Image 1 (spheres, rainbow, N blue to C red):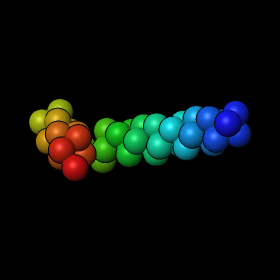
Image 2: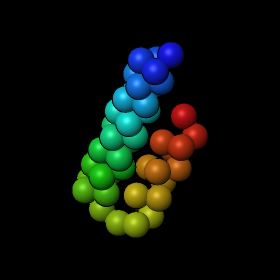
Image 3: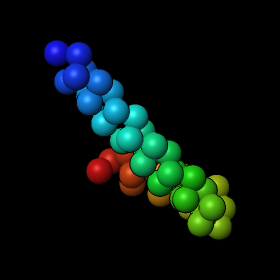
Length: 46
């Protein structure tokens, strides 16, 4: 049971890291705040 919980926690952390990377990349690539806002909204609506 502990092994399954540990694997679930690792998977959750990896997912969070990927999402954070995507958001940081969007910040870097956005020309202005409006463009960034649209990209984040699109990401959250997937």
